[in-house]
Amino acid sequence: MVKIILMTLLVIEIATARWAELRVSIARLVENSREPARARERGNVSAFDSAYAPFLDAVERHVPPSATVSIQAPSSDELYEYTAAYLLAPRRVVTAKMAGAWVATYASGKACSGPAFGVPNGCLEPPR
Image (cartoon, rainbow, N blue to C red; front, side, top):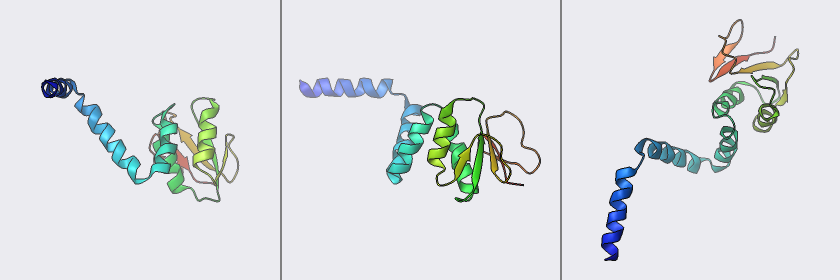
Protein backbone atom coordinates (compact mmCIF):
# COMPACT_ATOMS: atom_id res chain seq x y z
CA MET A 1 0.00 0.00 0.00
CA VAL A 2 2.81 2.40 0.89
CA LYS A 3 4.51 1.71 -2.47
CA ILE A 4 1.33 2.60 -4.34
CA ILE A 5 0.98 5.87 -2.44
CA LEU A 6 4.62 6.77 -3.07
CA MET A 7 4.34 5.93 -6.78
CA THR A 8 1.18 8.06 -7.04
CA LEU A 9 2.92 10.99 -5.39
CA LEU A 10 5.90 10.58 -7.73
CA VAL A 11 3.64 10.61 -10.79
CA ILE A 12 1.86 13.73 -9.55
CA GLU A 13 5.18 15.49 -8.87
CA ILE A 14 6.50 14.64 -12.34
CA ALA A 15 3.28 15.78 -14.01
CA THR A 16 3.23 19.14 -12.24
CA ALA A 17 6.96 19.89 -12.33
CA ARG A 18 8.15 23.18 -13.79
CA TRP A 19 10.91 21.84 -16.00
CA ALA A 20 12.32 25.21 -17.07
CA GLU A 21 12.76 26.26 -13.45
CA LEU A 22 14.29 22.89 -12.63
CA ARG A 23 16.92 23.31 -15.37
CA VAL A 24 17.87 26.76 -14.04
CA SER A 25 18.06 25.44 -10.48
CA ILE A 26 20.28 22.53 -11.51
CA ALA A 27 22.58 24.86 -13.47
CA ARG A 28 22.90 27.14 -10.43
CA LEU A 29 23.56 24.17 -8.18
CA VAL A 30 26.38 22.97 -10.43
CA GLU A 31 27.87 26.47 -10.68
CA ASN A 32 27.62 27.04 -6.94
CA SER A 33 29.23 23.71 -6.12
CA ARG A 34 32.35 24.78 -8.05
CA GLU A 35 32.88 28.03 -6.14
CA PRO A 36 30.74 28.05 -2.99
CA ALA A 37 32.15 31.25 -1.46
CA ARG A 38 31.75 33.14 -4.73
CA ALA A 39 28.21 31.80 -5.15
CA ARG A 40 27.19 33.06 -1.70
CA GLU A 41 28.45 36.54 -2.58
CA ARG A 42 26.64 36.55 -5.92
CA GLY A 43 23.46 35.15 -4.39
CA ASN A 44 23.32 38.10 -2.02
CA VAL A 45 23.73 40.52 -4.92
CA SER A 46 20.94 39.04 -6.97
CA ALA A 47 18.56 39.27 -4.04
CA PHE A 48 17.93 42.96 -4.75
CA ASP A 49 18.99 43.24 -8.44
CA SER A 50 19.73 40.12 -10.48
CA ALA A 51 21.46 42.03 -13.31
CA TYR A 52 23.96 43.73 -10.98
CA ALA A 53 26.16 40.65 -10.35
CA PRO A 54 27.17 40.15 -14.03
CA PHE A 55 27.93 43.88 -14.25
CA LEU A 56 30.20 43.75 -11.20
CA ASP A 57 31.86 40.57 -12.48
CA ALA A 58 32.80 42.41 -15.70
CA VAL A 59 34.07 45.44 -13.77
CA GLU A 60 36.18 43.14 -11.61
CA ARG A 61 37.70 41.46 -14.69
CA HIS A 62 38.67 44.75 -16.39
CA VAL A 63 39.72 47.02 -13.50
CA PRO A 64 43.09 46.43 -11.81
CA PRO A 65 42.96 45.69 -8.06
CA SER A 66 44.84 48.90 -7.21
CA ALA A 67 42.43 51.19 -9.11
CA THR A 68 39.58 53.44 -7.99
CA VAL A 69 36.13 52.77 -9.44
CA SER A 70 33.31 55.31 -9.57
CA ILE A 71 30.00 53.41 -9.54
CA GLN A 72 27.11 55.20 -11.27
CA ALA A 73 23.83 53.42 -10.54
CA PRO A 74 20.29 54.40 -11.61
CA SER A 75 19.18 54.53 -8.00
CA SER A 76 20.62 56.36 -5.02
CA ASP A 77 20.07 53.17 -3.03
CA GLU A 78 23.16 52.56 -0.92
CA LEU A 79 22.96 48.83 -1.63
CA TYR A 80 24.61 49.44 -5.01
CA GLU A 81 27.58 51.22 -3.45
CA TYR A 82 28.00 48.81 -0.53
CA THR A 83 27.72 45.73 -2.73
CA ALA A 84 30.25 47.11 -5.20
CA ALA A 85 32.67 47.99 -2.40
CA TYR A 86 32.39 44.49 -0.96
CA LEU A 87 32.70 42.56 -4.22
CA LEU A 88 35.29 44.77 -5.92
CA ALA A 89 37.71 44.89 -2.95
CA PRO A 90 40.60 45.74 -2.83
CA ARG A 91 39.59 48.37 -5.40
CA ARG A 92 38.47 51.70 -3.93
CA VAL A 93 34.79 52.33 -4.76
CA VAL A 94 33.33 55.85 -4.82
CA THR A 95 30.03 57.25 -6.06
CA ALA A 96 31.25 60.63 -7.33
CA LYS A 97 33.19 60.87 -10.58
CA MET A 98 36.85 61.42 -9.79
CA ALA A 99 39.86 62.23 -11.95
CA GLY A 100 41.93 59.11 -12.47
CA ALA A 101 39.09 56.71 -11.61
CA TRP A 102 37.42 54.10 -13.77
CA VAL A 103 33.75 55.00 -14.29
CA ALA A 104 31.37 52.05 -14.15
CA THR A 105 27.85 53.03 -15.24
CA TYR A 106 25.16 50.48 -14.46
CA ALA A 107 21.81 50.23 -16.27
CA SER A 108 21.75 53.75 -17.67
CA GLY A 109 19.85 52.70 -20.78
CA LYS A 110 22.24 54.76 -22.92
CA ALA A 111 24.76 53.48 -25.42
CA CYS A 112 28.41 53.60 -24.39
CA SER A 113 30.28 56.49 -25.99
CA GLY A 114 33.78 57.89 -26.18
CA PRO A 115 36.41 55.73 -24.53
CA ALA A 116 33.75 53.75 -22.63
CA PHE A 117 33.09 50.18 -23.67
CA GLY A 118 30.17 47.90 -23.05
CA VAL A 119 30.02 45.37 -20.25
CA PRO A 120 26.97 43.30 -19.27
CA ASN A 121 24.21 45.71 -18.20
CA GLY A 122 26.34 48.83 -18.41
CA CYS A 123 29.46 50.71 -19.56
CA LEU A 124 32.98 50.93 -18.26
CA GLU A 125 35.22 53.90 -18.96
CA PRO A 126 38.97 53.75 -18.27
CA PRO A 127 40.65 56.64 -16.48
CA ARG A 128 41.67 59.61 -18.60
